[in-house]
Image (cartoon, rainbow, N blue to C red; front, side):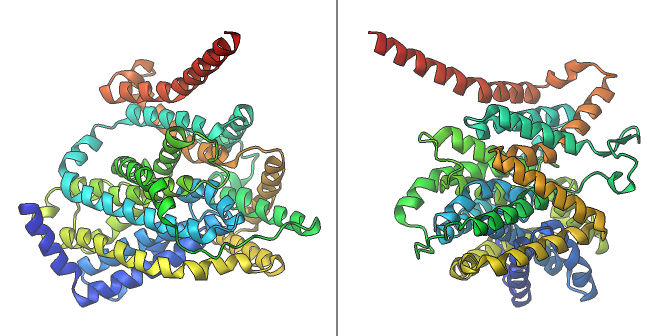
Length: 503
């Protein structure tokens, strides 16, 4: 009953006219920011933070605004992924795998509407989890040390095997390229320069946005130009902007499963929506892809990662609110917003500022409804992007991509690097090398290396720390099972068929 009464207090705060107004405004701004490649939720929240402080908004109103921007970005990131094959941020990469092929089949509206619905379900499940299990999950997240995080990264890479399909060598090559790119820059432990070739521009490593824009956006532009030269087929249009009952039934359980997975991963500080969407996509592919249609425009491959990355975003509020530990880079910026108001996140926050905490949680429920109501009618507007002719679409994508990359360091070196990576991405795609393992190898490689080195530094190099705790052991077993069980199953089926044919 205490939780219900606190939640009622929170709705009292969130339903105030000023808070409803900023939640709506934040949801719209977040959707637009998420749509633009290169900005992402962290930049959206960082841009709005000084504005909220300058306007002298009350702390609960400022936090509601920033949370609405954060959730809105997770919704918006899917739009460019599905329609243009240009992920707005890392967590939207998995959505592009099936979303873009759906758009090429003329089902862009269906992909957008199912992703909006899945995002809504994922966020609502995670917000409900936030209310019910916050104290317990916060203690559980504290049990994760470097060794457990390394095991989690291994599990994530094992899940990558689910993306391999019938191209294990090419996927392995892509993962190796991604891992190699993640090692460029200054070694965070020793300060040694690695693979920088004496270039000061590479001392900070290659920025994620440069890699993703180059490999996805620029290579896509080159493919568009190639299609124009060779008379590429026009995109058909089904006219449907909303998923039907059959598609809803097909994705419903996967959406729920991925929401739970996304929330659990989101509770872990630092794991993030990228890991959540990768695990959810791989899990769904293994559980349901009997026909081998994932990666070719399967609606289940759109619903699962979208539910997971939105659930993860909401889950990242658990460690921030209960422990004062940011669950993601975006919640780290939001913690900075709280410190501007002399508010310290942590266990005492629930007793000292119940209106702020429960007002924020209640605003997430309201913000999700606003986003769903806002996004579904706009599906038709977004899909018109597909009808734009290539002669005007290509320069537009190129301009957005260039501005997004240039805004990181304001240097032309990044633009040159983006172009080179685009050419490499084009060649790899012409050779049917999958891009998802490459990007995920790049994103997860740094986290994996850092946690491995931290774990080994604790024990002076003793490897046993990596599989000592029950959590680590469980994750290693799960990783081994993810890789070995499907292989054993295929072997069993093949032997059985051979036995039947011989008989």
